[in-house]
Length: 362
Image (cartoon, rainbow, N blue to C red; front, side, top):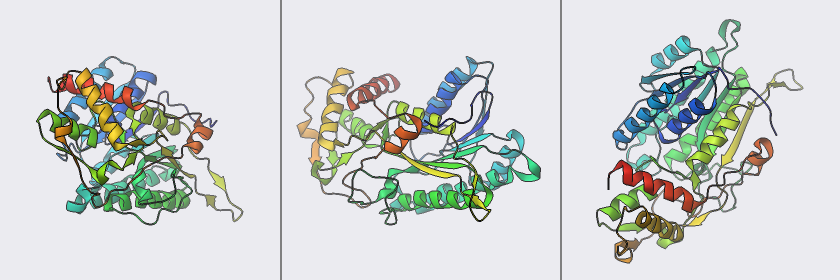
């Protein structure tokens, strides 16, 4: 198993800190890492209900208050603002950077491509440039850049489970193309400037206070309103659902183990670069998933026990940009970090259903 750097007392920049994974990561670091100095940035956009982002920030503020030995500072702004990114790096001099800020979602990238170019390409470029210049004038600089990639990069890959060794040159959405671009950009910067970087391909992350644009959340909203939910590809889709706590544990372990800086035979640096899948590596059929979600919504009291689910389900064809299966090969993650996501779907959806009932006061 990899051994690396300690997080204790480190200055850590988390971009997308009010986002689903970002906020949960910040909470975990506050709870578990002594004397940690956390800096968060998020543009708080309205791609989905900003009140959920505000709720997450409130949780962080509360947690930060319980750990006076640590610190938390939040900047409202975009990583696409180069001056702001430079200012944050000059002011806080982060030891580690976790870039989770991105415009997410496959379908939204078809109607709003500008948002993806701005956040995922220009924004990420600014982060890479800031990491590069953190070494100026002999400074120690950033020890490790960890950034979010996505299972979407696999496109309609026929071979399953998806391995990071697979060729991923056929994205089926602009979102996927930007995430693959992030990996390529990080590789170039790792090679040119010896920046240790690790990309993480996340597989369908879900859980309490998650993203309302995700199926489990949208289905719940619709069922509660008595609307019909549409199940794509006639239910013949399988997804590798990964509970948010498992994702956060994986990110935390990866943060502590930057790829080693080494010199090649030509005397030039070998890029200290790595990419891993983080997924549950047990794809669930969409119809089974909906069935478990229904049961948990009834159990949590979100929906009545006599709810007629069959009357509110419609099986429809596949939609553009979507893929029939996602399935993570997580063997490298297990090998290098001794970790494998393990939360089962029922437990994860139970946590979500309970949170939903409380948050929306159903």
